Every structure is written in structure tokens, then in C-alpha cells.
Image (cartoon, rainbow, N blue to C red; front, side, top):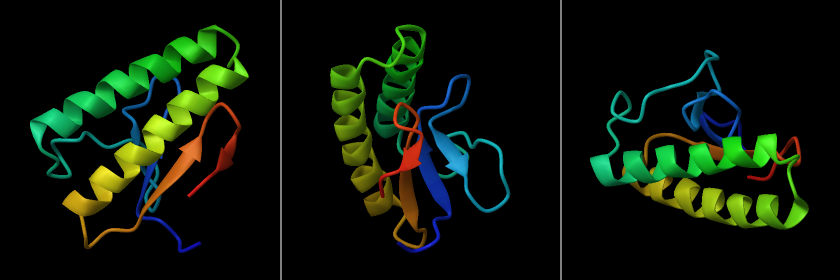
Length: 96
């Protein structure tokens, strides 16, 4: 796996986009993502927060990770000059 610039990440109180180089979280509009994708990331991240409070049920984490990997593909297509990865907060490991 290449070292990512951005990680799609459902961490509690995050934005869904982690700056993998400098640390911290990024706003979707700051990195130039279109409003519909930004809204989808925010909705997905909110669902991941709910999964946190539910104790990360395995079936829910699996669904959210699948959705997150789809978001990764969409972000990568919008930011072709960046390497985008995915971190599963429910599994506490990088999946892409």
C-alpha cells in the first residue's frame, strides 16, 4: 500500500477526511470536493459515529466500511493528484 495523503476515516468527532501527512481532519470543501460528495461523507461519518455508540456491531461496521470504500473511490476520482486510503474505525485498521 502506498502512503496516503488523505484517509477516509469514520473516527468519532472527525470530518471523515483525515490529513494523513500533517495530522488532523480536513473539511471536504477545503480540499475541493463537490457539495454532493461532501454531504455523502458527512452522512457516512455520522452513521459511523452512531456505530461507535452502539459498540461497533460487526454487520454494521461491514456495511459502513463498504460504503466508506465507495466514498474512497469517489474522492480519489475527484482528487487524482492525491493518494487516498481508508481506515476502518470499527476494525481499527487500514483497509486501503
